[in-house]
Image 1 (spheres, rainbow, N blue to C red):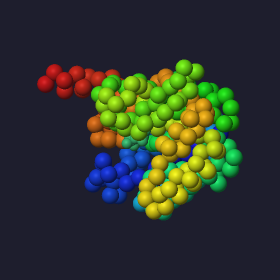
Image 2 (spheres, helix red, strand yellow):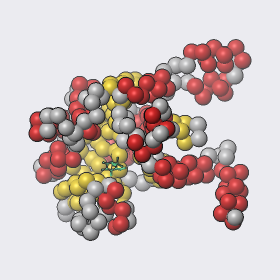
Image 3 (cartoon, helix red, strand yellow):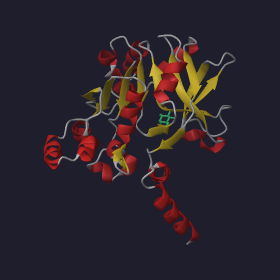
Length: 280
Ligand code: G1P
């Protein structure tokens, strides 16, 4: 299994900050959002990771590189603690830049050579999940064949289905249909896909067909996944864990609060502060 992170988008929900700071670099306190995903992959046993970025996102490449100047300063100071903080993550991380913003289908097609016959776990960096078993590992465990596509899903409130891809399942637990952001009341299910899928290599020829239908505009993986679903090859997996959505301003704010309350070094003082704020 290899990991692919789709990180080329403009991040318009966070303008003007995203004029210069990629949203994937927004930190939860001191760690950029994308680092949580890379660590989830590594903790799941994935060694090869492709980040699909764009020319606007050079800081992503720098972040995963060595920081030679700080290394030398901290080595002189003999500060192991600081050196530990800047140590690059242990994975083969490579980048490819999407040349035109033509949708996530186009971004995924850029991963075809990298996949070279392996299944890939695709992550949208907006979704950060804290769980005992890393989310990617949960999906890998749900995968029983190299032809499986597995979508991470969770239940959402009926009035929120228009913000997600919603899956319908048939009696044998396989996905029968994925509908992207359906109107409220238009579908029976409230099982939402989050930004973690395991895709088999069968997705690539289907994405190429999709591109041919729309040679110059945006295209997505939804129809190709539905084709695989019609062949009975798509599963959903209701994962366990706490999902934080850092993809929009309110979600990001909630994520900061949740993460602040998880951090051993901050949670007590932060909780006292929150109680004061609430009582005001
Ligand atoms: C994306 C996907 C959607 C999924 C959601 C989960 O939407 O298109 O299927 O349910 O992520 O976070 P976005 O939030 O980027 O609009």
